[in-house]
Length: 548
Image (tube, one colour):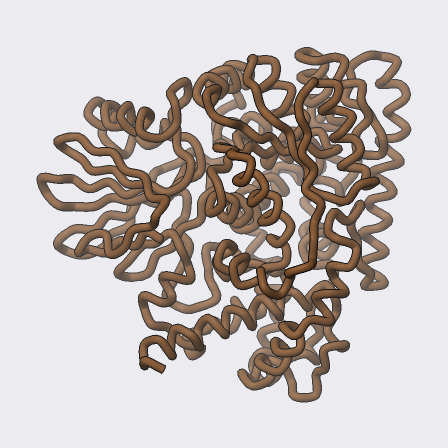
């Protein structure tokens, strides 16, 4: 953990990296690089040179990766800190401190359950996350990707990076040179690339292969699952090694405390369980950097499914998007006590009102804007940061210029995976013809393949929409094909942790006394359980302060 106050660094993490010159001391956590330059110290050395040329505020625009950095000016003893420009690394601030861990920040300030933010708690048990840079407690917030925080003799001040908005420019970005320079930066690392049945991970893999970078591929899931079987086919065709992490639940309850620490108490612990096993296996194999296809959403129509196929409307259907994809199964008011009931009653309308701030001139631009600024830093950033607590991890397609490029693609370029088709067919036409988990379509530009794929594509979109609607209407569970262990949900519900969670949240006057474990829907149970783990953390820090 890295914690910074006006007095300096208060504690250091074992995986903290450092480099210095006569003017500055740099410390950072996470994965950091400049295009074309090796990650870590070599890139920070070049960053220091850019600071001398441009000043820090302009120089930090060149940094890539997912990280939190602290820079000490040796002459003045002032400190500057910031996260990456893409929102992939989550860090936190209070009035007097900044830190890479929410749990450690809570412990540092000695917070108790009296500091819980009621609206954030309701958001957490409904969504499994807390949005808009909020946290579960009052007084601690996420550091926004657009913020620079400075500490000096007069205390803490917050400044803006003045990052360009998602709709800035005209999308004039050359993605192949970007990947070529990125490949040059990481070519000497032992790389592991996520490879599923989808198109985004395949795009990353074929581009790295195209630029001559060696890597292993890996997938998490059960044998026979579509993502796993297609990944085996793609890896064999590419001549790369594929490692399959088959999720286990043998030590579920014993491993949850460590997964809770890695996920940092601000998201559904059980959503991280499988990826934690996956990344631990990478560490055992000596992997030095994991790469994922997160961000590929901006290159296709994944974020627009609720309006399929009407992608040029001037009206964004926020209510439809919200109820179909963000919160198809809200928590029942009957779960809660007192003021938590009224907070739950206003949650949906309050969230929809917040989303109107992101409206742009067309429906699809609005959906992109909501995902990039509201959802990704919390959901995507949460997964990326948790992964980086296990081993260095990077999702190159969430870099701002890549996102802006996708945002400005013509609608037809994102429809039917057209961008992926053109790119993958260009660099590896054989791999492009292999089916995907999106209805069995390929990503080939070959006319014969395209002709076969059109009907499959429309059928897949329609089927997915119907399943989402069914989930909304009948409160069932929806997933294309579960990657978790088939008994995972059952084991959670039958666990001692689940029983204790319900009783603890009753004692805290969050759940009504009459609520039983079987009353809580599967969609919410792991959220309540994760909240109870955070409550236990608050109890433990209180006991430590009192020496009990």
